[in-house]
Length: 43
Length: 104
Length: 357
Image (tube, rainbow over the protein chains, first blue to last red):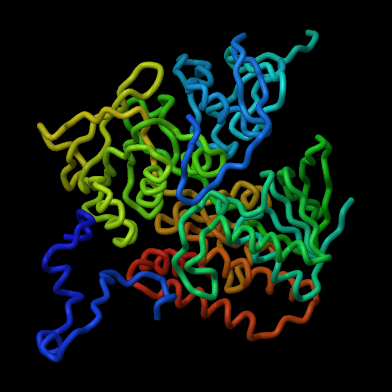
């Protein structure tokens, strides 16, 4: 787990991966933002 | 040891000064804390604790912790982590709590 | 004797933003700072800040210090006194300080903002007093302010934001980081910082603790072991790291000595890092006219310190009689609220709920 080791595992990745339906619709941006932190510049 | 290449910081050239530590002549940069100059010269032990004689080094760097008290130009209990280095300074280890040169 | 509307102790992010705010409404301000520079700990923060765009997110801490300094330079009603530590505040409303020329100064302020910051915590282990063991802040100062590295290889204790960020900065300065050791089961800092140091090959050992430092006159190594849920070392998990430096980033405590001495009501808060003052919604202590901003009121980070500075700057100016629009207060309070809204700030919310009056 990312929160224990600093390395994202499959479960972590699944949490930010778009739905299968969305993936089938075509290319999509995937944001590797695993954690909600007090940070807004990219909003 | 001084940082030579750094991706973000650039060092401003400072005047090199000489000072003595326990009689040894060393070089440092004018205005940097005495402890930084000693560190750069590889000197990590800054004093020994008064009761158990344990070695003490640089710990907080902001003048809070009293780990770095030394005798500077004859004056004891100087916090060398926040005291700027100048040309010709005489730095020595402190005995115990340090003694001021006063008449009894 | 000097007289002023607002005296501010500490020129870090909280003190400087308080000064700018109070002065912008017309108040005369004196800033007392024990160091030689403005910016407090910002001057060693070589990394870009997170937080809100309104409070300089995306800018490096060192550059934020310069932005504040430039702004203050333009303000005629702000007097900055560097290398001038504040010593005490007394019943007759006199604040005493020590000038760089070695003279005692007396200042009579109408209001006072303490923005004194924090100091590093220590943890117990065998030989924890050996030279070569530093606070993480000290390593940052030595390295990023004075350009001297602490050693050749470092063991970092603590995987909070400071431990993670300083590990990265050590690598930038050409120093090896052997591992980051964290006693808790989870990384305390932001995972994005953790991933960044992991990508550089630095292991993060959660559920591990330092057992002892090795060496006689200075650090020559460290023994680390896995710990169980009762924080006891697990048998046969001890291993040795060959390092010449141990860096402690195990939390900060608010610096509140002047608040104690001034007679402010102080309580203990585990969540906020130690002894903290009881404050009202303007961050005013139980002594009327004394305000607290930044880490001295509870450990958070620079962005909240900046907004708390704004809030106390507004409150102090208003107290003295200057006109301060209500919207200024609302904006600052909302800023703090949104900063503390997320899951990573849960402990801050809990701590504050217990000490606000």
